[in-house]
Length: 301
Image (tube, rainbow, N blue to C red):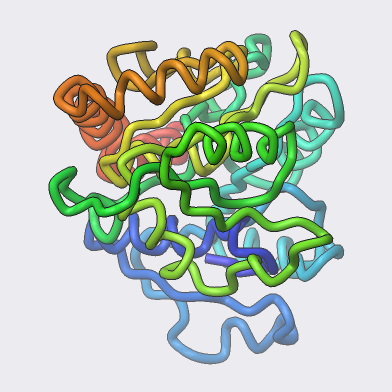
């Protein structure tokens, strides 16, 4: 697993490592800053099936990513390269990223169902988000102390949603960060998970326009934590989960406040929906299913 991310909200490392370990897959972090020959000087790779996971948001040779020389060394050593592209935008450079990594890797993972003409390729794998291990995410509803959490950046009017909740008197855990509030940035993933695990509700959104929407990592992490996700409509989330059964769709701020108020007063309903979402995630999109699909696809290439 290559760790090249700087911000915790984009940290593939934590999720992939824990998911692999849940399936008894041996893992090791590889530092791209090492000289290419240093990667192979120790028993870094055993004789078993060897796979390296890369962050596909950036190409080789940039932002802490491996170089083209590294990629060539991996191929020569028989190591299979799997790339996950977290921000695969349909209307921007998503297609270019996919085409680029298809030339340099064995399998590309995306989280955007709008690439219908590409998903049919056996070398492109569609998944709702990063693979999620049951531990250390899931928390029982009865162990949750907080009402609703807002975590991450203040993009896409999230600040407005948060303020309106505060005006309504509902207790808010506010860990959103921005350039004006850099102190809310979180460096450790365990600290990032705490508010999600302790909150009964969480709001997130990835809708940008009718042509563009992404499933933000926080959506999947909220479902994994056993909390109830309220998610702005227009997302591809309903490609994987069922509205009102696994999560609550939100039309706008007034709709959000009305639904949050109702669910806060009817926690039996809220708990049932949260439980259904977690069940779908950990059964249909479990770590085991994720890694089995990767291995099956690599073996068939």
